[in-house]
Length: 547
Picture (cartoon, rainbow, N blue to C red):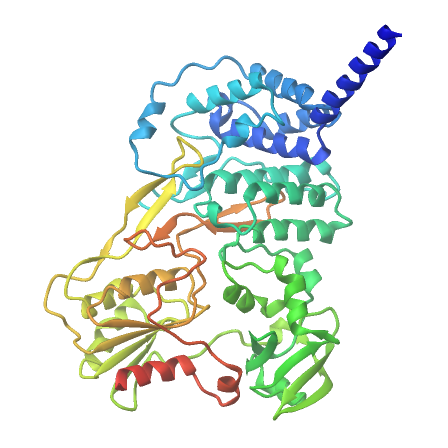
């Protein structure tokens, strides 16, 4: 009897231990993604390109899926590492410690996760980290040493990618996830922890319902980096949103779509669309609900930029008409309006290069002027009492030329972090360039910068430079929050995407990513302002100058 009880206790305890060590399919694949990516960029022989690392992943996946607990899985990884051959100790690796690193993105803590790995495996992974690959990498390089952003190289494109191929779907996820894990300067700022993104996305890449569903999974993955530079467009994502557009521009304010202008005036007149019309429902669904439902597919570093990027997701569809409910002159109406293909529209925004406003105030539209235009424009505006520089657009590299007129000294205006390829996940601090000149101030009037959510990347960089002027005030609303030279690369199948490739900070280390540039006077466009045909940000600038 005692022997029977003892045997039952042993069996029960053994089952408890096994249950504690049992891993889900998602956990096994997530650890595989991490180990595979870590070896790709850290192991000297893998990082040197001595293996077809995609094929090695495909070989090990069946073994991973058959494993039942952490001991079995750890043994699979241990044997995988041992097959790569003996590693020598790294004599150069300590040199990394002499660099000034930005470490908020660096996280190899998972190596010591006792719930997933046994001690032997953790020890091997730690040894690889300590003796990591140095020098020229097979899979990643620096585009320009003076800038620092990465170039993804020597990746197999798989042009004939069949979406039903599970191995290639997982490769798509694993490859992209690890590029962000080790080389995206703003990974630490994502709303969802990057490890959690991997866990969330694995089932979506494993079990898509159809090809469009798979493309939406890729889009959602890219959007998860919370970077306005993170663009991903395919024919399948376009078909999801729809190829038919209404002929009107709009702005999302207070969960409503307010018409601000037209891509084609003639087509807008057919349905009597007017600037200031407030659309509250589209096909009987509230505009705010549509945005919330599709937000996971709309890229942007912050909500204002996401709302600006929602231009294709609120009214687009697969038919040539759409039902809207809207408010005009405080009355609510319902009607069906026409939608058209995008080739019927004029997508260019027209504006004067510069002009003199009432009250002897100069105005420059930064998206229209070139470097060669600056001397003539500044000469013509030299006697104005103020100049308004409208940066609610994409400038053309004129920042340094203009800074020479509005600054009386050389100024630091940014700092940079760029990837340390010899210690993936770590980033190196570097001083930025200066702008302005040490000489008598050439333009002595007030200078006002206008910004909003359309001020992105080079526009934000330009703003940071011009903010160092002697008498400069910035007016407007939160900018896009995406600065730093872009790194463009291809996902499996040749689908293009990109990330902000370097980190851009103010000289005092203030972040610009997601937050946007510093603003002195905050002003937002309102529904009533649109109805009244006012540019409230510009009006505030004029009021500020006159006061």
